[in-house]
Image (cartoon, rainbow, N blue to C red):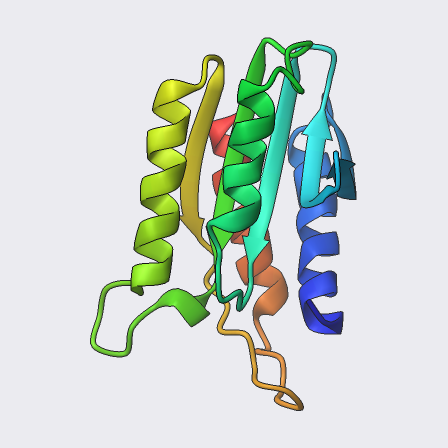
Length: 155
């Protein structure tokens, strides 16, 4: 993803750990061969947070999570929460969101409705990822913390 995206991911993990300390938070948690950006887990709950920074196919990893849950990979948990965070890259200049995000949300919502004990929450990460060599927005930390608060409020 790049250094800036890694910094956002790490700050998100730390902010979630502060807000929901009952979960053990980590980054780059691997399920089968699929890395999940941020995961919080306890004996009963599993929270997967996928950060969609600038992916051409944002539906892929999230769809795999639902597939793995349906296959029984997460049966030891009473609740599985999947949050997909979409950066400003998926916002259209004319308003609204890109079809890539719309399709990812459709797949997530449809999958969650068909897989027991799994919920799906698409959220906006209010950061526009800079193009290669571009400057980070000055307020990226505050925006990441706002997003962590939104995720934490779902838990």
